Every structure is written in structure tokens, then in C-alpha cells.
Image 1 (cartoon, rainbow, N blue to C red):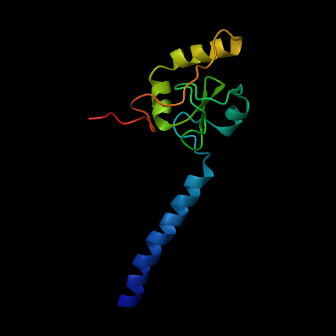
Image 2: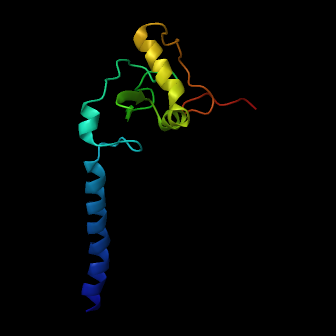
Image 3: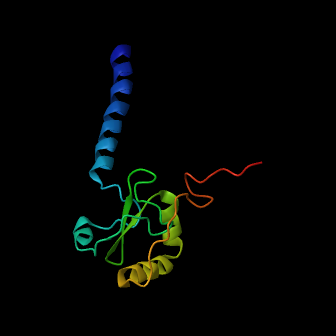
Length: 124
């Protein structure tokens, strides 16, 4: 009896973890503000290879993060950029409008600003 009871406590968390992992992998990983996949396929595509917030290449921090805001796709390079975007999305959508209209271009940036992943450390 003790042995089967012990096995139950080993198997039950493993099965629960597997189920949790499978349901987590079923999502597209877009996180907050995701919406349904039908709405995402109708989104106006993001046409640039740089992050809308800090102007670095989208793959600078690994896999880019895709968000859809008011029916328009936005690509960001990291979670701090997602947070910055959602703090005041009107500013960033206006920037996207200017980029699309050709009245603004991405500045040349090679290093992230302070507070973002990959930024240089301050010398003490």
C-alpha cells in the first residue's frame, strides 16, 4: 500500500506538469493583449526589421514578440519594450504611422538604452 501511494505522488505531479506544458505550448506565446488567432490573421502586417520602441534589430534579444494593437501588428524585441509600448501605445502607433507614411525613418542604433536588456553597465 505504501509503495503504490508513493508512486501516485510521483506520477500525479508529472502528469499535471505535462498537461500544463501542453496547454502552454498550444498558445502562440504572444502573451498579454493576444486576442484570438482569427483577429491576428486580419491584422495589418508590420513591415520593418527593427523594434518599434528602441530601434534595434528584432532578433537582437532572441525571438521577437508579436503583438496586435487595434488591428495592427507590432513587433518588439523584448519584454521591456512590450511594457514600454503598453504604457503609452498612442505614441508608438503614431510613430508607426509616420514610418508607414515615410516621414520618419529608424535612427541607427547599435546599443540598447539604459534599463533594457543588453545595455552597457555603468562604470563605478
